[in-house]
Structures are given as C-alpha cells and as structure tokens.
Image 1 (cartoon, helix red, strand yellow):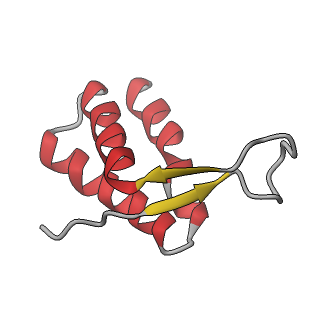
Image 2 (tube, rainbow, N blue to C red):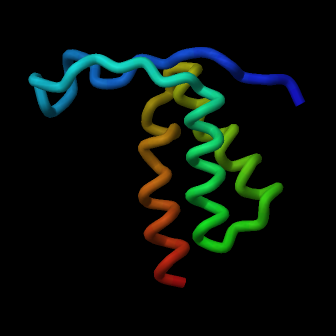
Amino acid sequence: MASEAGTREIGKAGSRSMNMKRQFVVSDALIEFSMQALIACGVEDEAAQVTARHLIGADMRGVDTHGIVRLPLYILSLIHI
C-alpha cells in the first residue's frame, strides 16, 4: 500500500477555542493511533486499517467533516453495540 505520509494542520483560526495552538500531526502517526483505537474496540485489523486510512485521507484532502473528527463517534457506536 502506498504511504499517505504528510502533515496536517489542526487548530485553525476558525476553531472554537481561539487560544488553541496550531499543531501539525504526521499522518502515519494519526493513522496508527486511529487503527489502535478501533482495534481496542474490537474491530478486525484490516477493517481498522482501511477505516483509519480513509478518515485521515479525508483530512489530508481538506474534507474535515469526514476525517478524524468522526473517530470518537465511531468508537462510541462500537462500545454501545
């Protein structure tokens, strides 16, 4: 699989907290974090990897509404099944 390595800025000026520092996150680290979070909720490894890559891929393309912001919602859904 091709790597989606890169960085993504979080905490932009339009965010709810104007005191929030701007941060850059390496996409591979965020993919790994997302995968591990999903696996911890019982998702199979391959499905967790695909889901994490799609979430971070959306963020990397600038579609923030369909990116990592959805991970907590997925996790809540999984733990309430």
